[in-house]
Image (cartoon, rainbow, N blue to C red; front, top):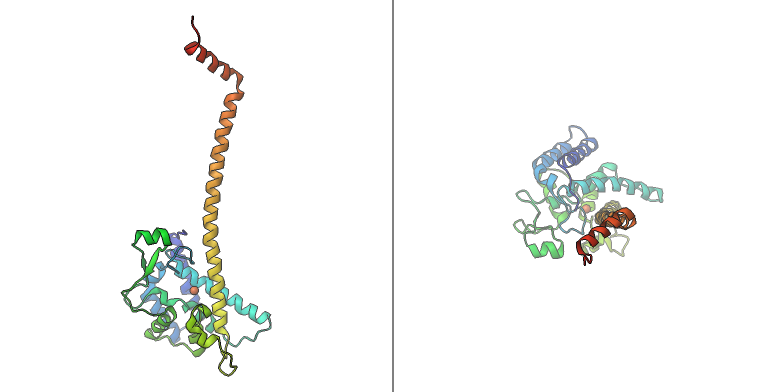
Length: 264
Ligand SMILES: [Fe+2]
């Protein structure tokens, strides 16, 4: 499993804060409230994983911030791709970045406690790969709902595009989203496609992160196999040298005969 160093954790955190400073207007209420929220949640957010199971995405300390940065970057590219494909972009970059930044905010926990806590059941850790489990001491809420709760608590206003983009980030993986996304009446269908951009970006980033985890395992396996091969080849080489050296072989033969030969 991926492990970030203290320097990497701090570096990712600094990048996240810089994105906020670069995106939201200096001195604006939104920027100030966001920075207050990030300051209050810093200790927990910097350590939070992005998921609880090893085979999911970025299930490691610092995975949350890493994943959020990944989604922001991918969402910007996805938005450009949408336009390049002929789509009409009716959202601003600020709305896009704001939604990407907060689509998983609920994973940080509530005001008092974290959402992901270490799985202390040994069997579940080993058999199911559950590194973390959800904290049942905090109210049971869907991740996007908790994200919107936290934002309103810190006085961070979201417009309707951002609210829907955060709420629908899981796309149709969340059945409740069918109410918004599986609509066969053009009058009721989404009037803005930012939720799709955030969902596609999140889905792509998550898939890449899964590959990275899987690749990491395979890389480790390949490295181990190559080490074993290397050890084997060195052993075989030594054995071959042993039999190929006639002087040494004769010495061994002489010694053998001296010790066990027929002395009569
Ligand atoms: Fe996500």
